[in-house]
Length: 439
Length: 113
Image (cartoon, rainbow over all chains, first blue to last red; front, side):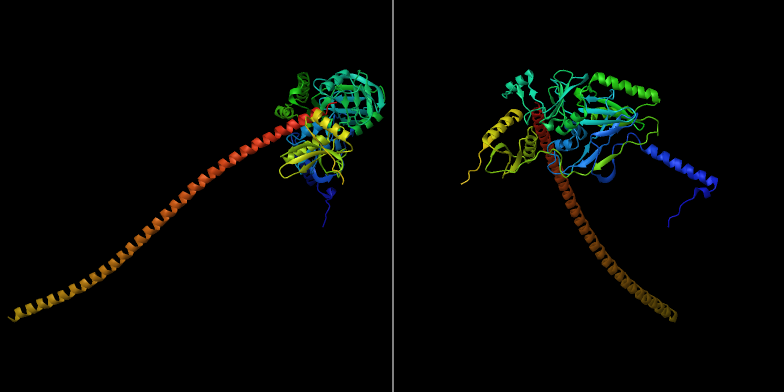
C-alpha cells in the first residue's frame, strides 16, 4: 500500500528535521562524486546512437560530447570502428592502449573517445588542432553556438602542416591533383613515377572535394586512403574521410576563416569541472605549449585558493590518452557531475568497412604471403584491405600455414598493378596466380 | 605334668594354627603373583603394541615427509617450468608486439600520398 507523506501535516519541528536529512543526503551525493572518479558507464542498457559530429556548445563550456564503450566483434579492426564513429585511428588507439589495431580480440570492450575539449582559439569559421588531429567548424554566435567536428590526417614530421591564420580561398568538386615537385621526386626514387597531374578518380589522393587555403599549396581535402585519417601521413594538407569532407565542403563558404593551431595540452570547463586532455606521443610534446598550460593551471590554483591534484595532472600528461579527464571542481561540491558515459550496441554493419568480393577461380589473383601464424596472416590481409584504393585480400588456411591471397582481379594488368603496389607500399614480394582454365 | 602337657598341647595348637595361616597367605601371594604376571604380560603386550603403533606412525611420518619433500620438489619443478613457460610466453608476446608494430609502421608509411 502506498502512503504519501503530507509535509503540511507534520509539526514544524518534524518538517525541519526532514528538510535537514534531505540536505545532508544531497551533500553526501556531491561529496562522493569526486572529479577524480574514473569514467564508468552509468547504465548497462545498450544505446544505438551517439552524437559523433554535431554538438551544441553551452555558454562558458569548452567540453563537448560523451565517451562511449563498445564490445568488439570477430573481424573488427580499430580503423573500421574509428571510421564508423567518425574518429581518427590515433584517437581510438590512444584511448585504448594495448589493443591490437588490426587483430583485436572479439568481445574486447573498447572506449570511443567522442568527447573533446575545444581548442584555445577564437570560435569562428574552422579551427584545426594538429596535435589532436581534429577539425572544428563553428556555427552560430556566442548565444547559440554549435560545433561540427571531424577527425583529420595531417602532415608528417618532415612535411608538417602549417599553423596560423588563413582562409578558404576557393573550393572544387572532383579536383585534379597537380603533383608537387617534391612528391614527384619521392615517387621517382621509390620506382613509382607519377604523372604531372592526376585526374579525378580512385587514384586521386585528393578525393572528391577540396577547399584550397589562402596559404599557397595547402588544402583541406578528401582522400582515397580513408584509413589514413588520424595519421601524420600528408605532405602538409589536411585530409578528411570522404563522407566528412562532403559535409564540410557543402557547409563552408569561400572566405571562411581557418585557424590552424598545435595544442597538445587542452584545458576546458564543463558544469563547474575543469578537464584536461593531452595528446601524445610524448616526444612530440611542445615545451612552449607545456609552459602555457602550466601557467593556466597555476592561475586556476590562485583564483580558487585551493591546490590542484598535481599527481593526477602528471598522470593525465603521462598517459596522453587524448580524452578529457576531470581534474578539478571549481567550487567544491558545486560541480553538477562528471559527464556520463554510455555503452553502445555494436552496429550490424560498420560504415566504410572494406568489402571483400568472393574469390573466383577463373580470375587472376595474387599470393601476398604464406605465413605460419594465423594472427599475422589476418593482420596482413587487413592491412592490404585498408590500402587506398582497396586491394581486396583474404586468408586461406592450409595444413601448416595461412595464405594471404589478394584478388580477384579482372585481368592480368590489374593483378600486376596490385603486385607493384604491394611491393612499393608494403614491401611485399607477391606472386601472380593464374586463373584456373576451364576445360 | 598335666600343666606341661596342656602347655605343649596349646603350643602345638598354636603352631598348627600358625601353619594354617601361612598356607593361606601363600595362596594369596601366589594368586597375586599370577595376577601381577598376567598384568605384566598385558603391559608387555601393550608396550609391544604401542611400539608397533609408534613404529608404524614413524614409518607413516617418514613416508609423509618423503611425500612432502617430493611434493615440494615437484612444486619447485613445476614452478620452474611455469616460470620458463611464462618467460617464453612473454618473449612470444614481445615478439608478436614487435611484429605488430613493424606491420603497423609499414602500414602508416603506405598511407602517404
